[in-house]
Image (cartoon, rainbow, N blue to C red):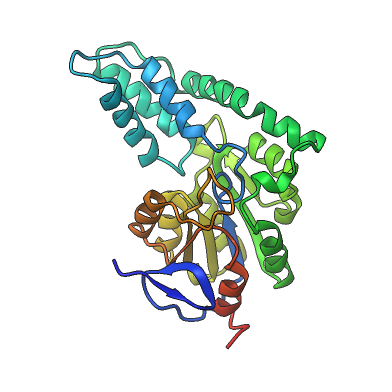
Length: 281
């Protein structure tokens, strides 16, 4: 796929030329990896747990087992965490083990992840860690700009809603979304990003072309593409916030499900959105 850059937004990669979409009125954001980096490193926690929980076969090596579970985990990135735990239970069963309930696996994973991020959340809370350290580069002025443009913002995450609200508040972005904050539930049938997108379109009586989405998981990008919205792939370099580097794995996966633009962070997002809205010539 040929990707081009535009001098107006040099950090962006485009699979095709853009045309303005002044009808855009509602904006959907994913959370982890798209706005928040508090949970950076979560795949390593999940991979470690999956490897520990899986019965080993004679043909397994440490490397082959890690690759197996990483592929399982990342193929479901963007969906609720419970789906990854369902996949773990299936793997345990197919290897001759007796799996626990997926919800048990989910709660154990969250316990381990909380231990990893505890210093981050407590440090942001007491002011010893600047919140911008864990907010994707240039997100704050970008959110302010979207609101100044009169756009309505939504937040939808595969992370549990209580945690999304807590961490969004720590990062100072919770109020940007007003009542429109949605996350995973223990009853997984009550939430999906597709459900939120359908809710946005139905409640506001707008077609899909009015929707602009930002995400680093394939689900929100694919769902936005399917309704005719404009999907921005956030191929964030989570380990080096603000580096300006595009994560190649995210780029390829998100372009493959219909992303219109790929960004490393929000440094050029204001100029990009102004162009889409027809605010620049």
